[in-house]
Amino acid sequence: FGATLGGPSAVAVVLGIAQFRNLLVKKEGSCFILRFTHVWITAEVSEPFTVEIGAADRMAVMVQPKNPRPGYPFEIQPAIAVLDAGDNIDPAFSGAIAVAVENSVGTVVPLCSFNTPGTLGAPGCMSQAQAINGLSTFAGLRVDTAGVNFRLKFTFGFLTAVSDPFDVVANDPYILNIDQQPVAS
Image (tube, rainbow, N blue to C red; front, top):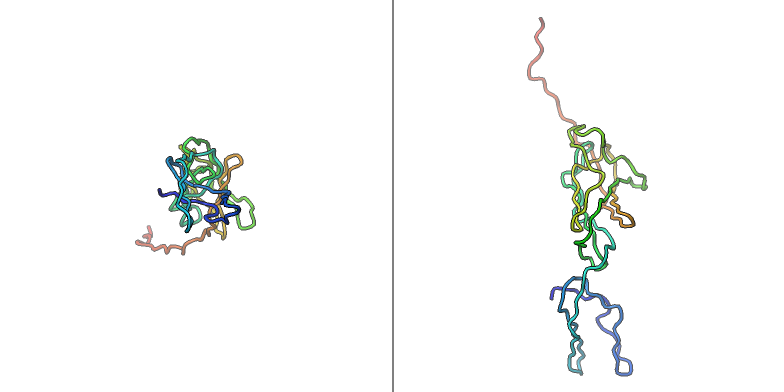
């Protein structure tokens, strides 16, 4: 229940045999059954079977970074999941996931000033975050320069995930008001 069957849902009957190939259940669980029907034949069901989480196959950006301003952390920091081939989060996965930022032509640009925490009002940021139970959340990530079509690229060995493109736009400048003029002495 609640699982989606992937692959062909209908095939031609040839010499009295309907052969399904490449069926896929993309959800971990047990006691799944397949029900086969035809308009002129009594329905048949398969024996119950179990789908287990496989090895880490890919990473996905589960929470996209949002509202970047030059020199300030994203208002919403990214979160990454490590998934198996069936899109299940791999609870056995742990490791440090690295992050870099690329511009629109794929050139890596500075993500943040790692050695100067607090610069421009932003806390120091992390160039990697530890994944625990297949999930990793970053904190303090920022891009220090304005630009368009940036993407965050997350890596762990052969696994990669790339964020949606985003622009880093400077806000309108603030107006400085002098509340009290200096007094000549």
